[in-house]
Amino acid sequence: MTDMSIFVAVQSDDFCVASEYNELRRQSGCGAIVTFSGLVRELSDNQLHSMTLEHYPGMTEQALTAIAEQAQQRWQLGAVHLIHRVGSLKPHEQIVFVGIASPHRAAAFAAGEFIMDYLKNRAPLWKKEHTSNGDYWVEAKTSDQHALTRWG
Amino acid sequence: MTDMSIFVAVQSDDFCVASEYNELRRQSGCGAIVTFSGLVRELSDNQLHSMTLEHYPGMTEQALTAIAEQAQQRWQLGAVHLIHRVGSLKPHEQIVFVGIASPHRAAAFAAGEFIMDYLKNRAPLWKKEHTSNGDYWVEAKTSDQHALTRWG
Amino acid sequence: MIKILFFAALRERLDCEQYLLSCDGTMLQVTDILQQLQSRCHSWQQELSRSDLLCAVNQQLVPLSANVQDGDELAFFPPVTGG
Amino acid sequence: MIKILFFAALRERLDCEQYLLSCDGTMLQVTDILQQLQSRCHSWQQELSRSDLLCAVNQQLVPLSANVQDGDELAFFPPVTGG
Image (cartoon, rainbow over all chains, first blue to last red; front, side, top):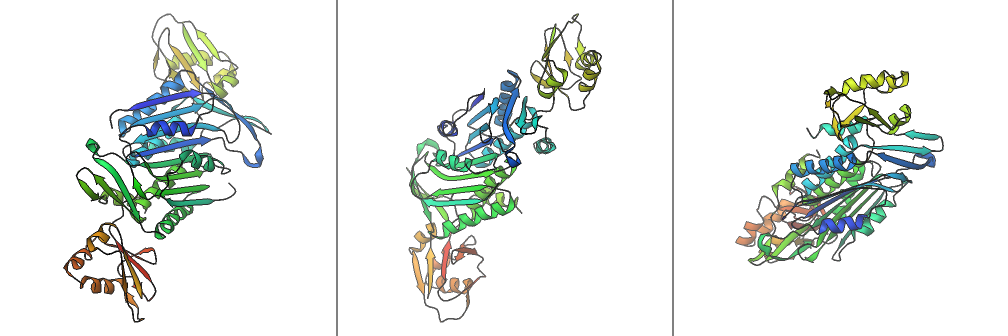
């Protein structure tokens, strides 16, 4: 493995998993590529019309970069790609992408989980759901807070 | 989530991660998609010319299906795609693909790791490396055996 | 001057996106500023004393005991829900 | 008749891909068959007594204590290295 790279983007445009994967594959010396994609889930009874992702411009990019850097300090990683969308999203649309290229699969999986756990707790992003019954800010889940404890 | 599906293939042809991802995305009710791809790594000094994947036809397909089914019993999964290539492969080529669609990210990550850990220890596949210094069967790694213990 | 930003549900409940606080140059703690803001009215009092309130100084998450000085960008927001 | 298959490094070292063993219909353990095969020659003795030898009966991994009967497909192979 010759070098490490981090790519972070916060954007309203959709992303293309195939393009990200092809970039990650170009990283030399990496035998393992793990990707995670988060999608907007429907609520029961198709009540969700859309979702708005609000964020703290500037801080979001910094927070995501810091999380990717922490992952690179913990594990031997070749490349980390981290993309989060903001603005209005419909059910089934892609929200977030994490891609990891690493020499080893254990590191690639662990880094992917680590990044998502930290992102869920540390990145200044907020979801508001627009439903048949009104608009609601999504509540933070205690399970997401608990997920952090395993990383010490 | 309306249904569960398993897709398993053992093939000499390459696979396309983008196609697999698009199929996984179609699974309803799934907010998380995790993919793992294993690639042929170079040896140091570019000594690896190619690799041959031998397998036990018939048993490989059964073993991979059984592993995917075990994962579906342990976690709430929408779809599992599992593809393993056999035959001759060059450095950087794709060897194996695991794709998971699940309502939840923790289940998707865990199932992906579980499937790779079991595949590494239970699926009848063997790698032979063709290098500048001769042909060598790859030795099984004790780290791969130890990885199984965490699943109880 | 200290620029104070509010986000998401907090922004809506306070009906305020940005608040400028003049600052005489002395070093303050975030808690001092919170007290000033809470004294504005009952709803600010209520919203800004929530135990899950998060705070960033110059776009870094910090505890409420952190220091702030003239020119800093301070932000308050509810628990994050991205991903 | 029991069909016995060998794979990978084991197949190469035994110089044998498939071996047919006649069977009088009695139930055997895999270990009984291994003994018969080991008695063929020194290299078979050596290769088939490795502690990491894996075994499948009808394409399912089984311990060497498993039973085999007429018509079964038996396979021996070294630790797997796919993925």
